[in-house]
Length: 296
Image (cartoon, rainbow, N blue to C red; front, top):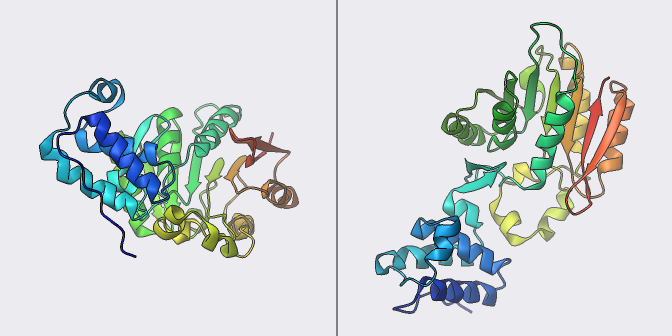
């Protein structure tokens, strides 16, 4: 059965346009229809925050009608709103996102906070500068945020995808972050470097689980940023195997991971034997989401 397209009723207020769009998306089973309708409406009207709410009673501008209908119909096809808008906020900053990169998630902000906290506790020799690498940088959200939040940090980042690196470079330039980008598989681009800190949010979805993901994720976000191998732990094992490429293990290693994987990843770090303390950090939903290894 062919799906009807969204057509906005003439002479609507902005509030009525929002209600029509969210009802249309809800009827198609789109997740978070109100949130998506608002994001796309704000984008089309160029309004954010208080300005959007103040304008709700205003007449919907006729010259924006076709633009609004177009973005709602793309959303109806399952395209993530962030890809339609071309942007996602992370740690209070706007990051460009395209289908070449995973959309940054709020829980990853907690990983950044943990790296900032425990990285600040690492001892430094006079004149020494900490070096950190972000593995599988995607949009560059982690690397750019660390570079901007930790002044004096030498920040490097890698990704296997040249298209993702293009996005990350644009985000670094746009936000004024000094990050050196390298292309390659996991730790390989940093052979011989010897970073003090490694941070990574690698692909961690078990391959057999991908078919059951939400359609927005499964059909639109890059599979290379999702597929973590048969059990979702392949990238972590490879990084542990690649540690001999570095002159010395990092003093701090920090991973994001999937539900139910914390114990396995912590065991991988313990088996490597390089870190005195293994810390597990839950996300806001109480799911163990990050595992850190720290050499005291």
